[in-house]
Image (cartoon, rainbow, N blue to C red):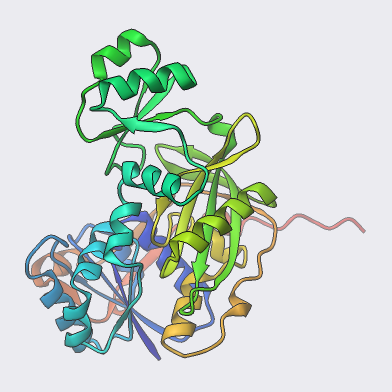
Length: 358
C-alpha cells in the first residue's frame, strides 16, 4: 500500500490529482488536506485533515509531522503556494521526513508563477514569446502598441484563472492604464479558438516522456471542453521549452497559435494542471508516473500512451450524510472516511448505452 498525501484538495487541480489517482491501478491510501472543512476534496479521500496556509510559519513543521504520523510516501499538490513553500524549504522537509516531494526548483517556480518573468525567460532562451513590456513602462507601452496594434492584453504578473485581466483597445485607454504596477502588457495572440494546453512530464533524468496537446475552450480561466489533437508546431515548441527549462516532473504550457501559424507560449504552469484528470483518461498518466518512478522505482514509459478523444467538464454534486463536516470542523481531521455515507450524483452514468446496429 502506498500512502499519498494530497494538499489543497479544495482546488480543482488537486481534485484532478485525486481523480487521476483513483483511475490508476495502484494500491493507494489517500490522505487529503485543505484549509477548511468545506473543501469538497477532503471527502473524496480515505482520510483527511485541516492544514495551515502555506504562508504560515508552521506549515513545513505541520507537513513533516503529518507525513511522519501517516507514514506518507509521497506528497502531491496542485496549489502553487504549497509547491513554492515546500520547494523554498525543501532541505528542511527532506531532513524531517522520508516522504518524497517532487517539483522544479524554487527559482524555476518563480519564473513560471510570474507572467512577466515568463515572457523574459522565453525571449532569453530563444523560444517563441508574445511581444510584451511592463505596464509601468509608459514609453515601452506606446512602442508596443505601434509594433502590434490594438487590442493589447494586460495581465497581473502573479495572477491566475484569468483574474484581473483586461484589454486595452486604443491610445486613450493605454494612456489611462499605463503606469499600473504589477502588470505585464502583451500583444493579443490569435483568438479564443486558437488556444491549446500542453501537458509535459520529465523523468528524474530530465528526459521528456511525451507531451499531450489539447485544443480547449475556457470559461473563467477553466477548461470546459478539450480535444486531444496532433499539432507538430505546438509539439515542437513545447519540446524546445522543456529542453531549455528542464522541469522537475510535470509542467503545463499554455499556447496560442498566431495568424502566421506560429505556436507561442503565454503561460507556464510548473505543476500538474487543471486538466490532469482529463489527460489521465486519455492515457497521459503523469501522476501515476511520478509515483511509479519515485516511490516504486519502476520504468514509466507505459504511462504515456495517448489516445484521441474529447473531454467535457460539467457540474456535479456530493452528498454527505451524518456529521462528517462538523467533525472535520471540530476536530480538524477524520481518520476513516469510510465510516460515513458519501454519495456522488451519478445519475447520468446510468443512462443506457446506445444500441448497436445489427
